[in-house]
Picture 1 (tube, rainbow, N blue to C red):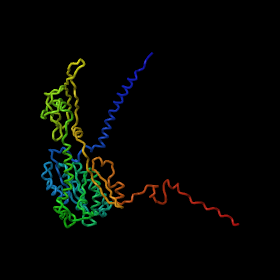
Picture 2 (cartoon, rainbow, N blue to C red):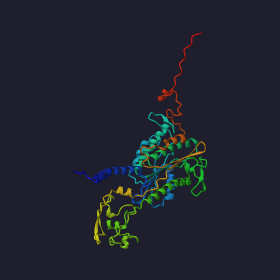
Picture 3 (cartoon, one colour):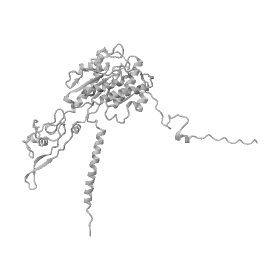
Picture 4 (tube, one colour):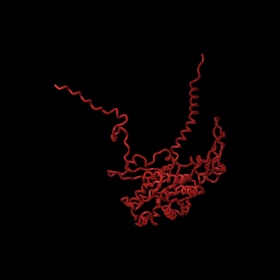
Length: 455
């Protein structure tokens, strides 16, 4: 009688096939998870700038010039920063020669080293422009906003190509009511485009408003003393105002610098004994008292040098990396003392496989989980004494197919005051005549009954 294959063999074969089939799937899951959470362990600023110094460039008009003066006074002595003392000017982008200005700006920053960009502009942008038909388009109209958004977005994309951390400061509140309303419309556009390009937006209008949210030329300085912060024209800032304006940029910048610093120290994984076996060329680090190497524990080779951790800039030791920063393949062997089956001490050689790893992967996987970005807070008062609040965090992935905050239904309805179109069939759909499927639900009027003959 012939006996079929043992069921255990089928189980083993099925397990092996399932494991092989799961390998590419697991890789895809890792890639998908990384695509979703690629910003979770990355700071807003690059933790490893060239030479460990951040190149800071201030871009814009007279507003930006004031930020440069205040920032130089407050952070000029910071050894982590190299603040360019010359402003990168961008003026009047709604003028007729915008194309030439944009090309000149793109060419001027193409070869300039830039790790941090601080931008504020819009002083001379509240002007009308002529469209393709030669018609003058007034400020803050839908056509004007669309063109302003296009021009702002072009400048933002030019800066974005530098892979720098960008802090874009919105326009302040203005003294004239009409000018202030136009500035609010421009800030909406700037906030939206900054959000989609992964920049940080800094609201300066709320920072200089009084307790009622209105314009005031006076206010507390950084020491809490009431000072004149705005010029007589109701637009520009005084020296104390520029110092306070730069403070709001400095606050976000210092927080991001500290977060980047916390991600610079990358510890080398593995116990000290294992590190000593794999990287015997670096022996500058003394073993901890509790280390089995220091104690001369059995099963280890105490005379093997101990590897030091990664450098301060986060790169691996020079002996394990090439010029490009890639981790070289290193298949090492260690010898362990074990007790054999006969009760005697034997030596066993174990090979440790360390494949080559690209520098980009080393840098990404070595960074610790950060707390994330604080985001931008939107606050608005609505009817009934209620306060509407929401937080918006700029991110590189949020620009890919996601809705802008100013296009969200709650923002359009409760902040802008727009009347959203009703859905067909809903209670607020009062369109007449009724169209679509509801037409079949209309009740036909009763037919007139035949007139009875006279009696």
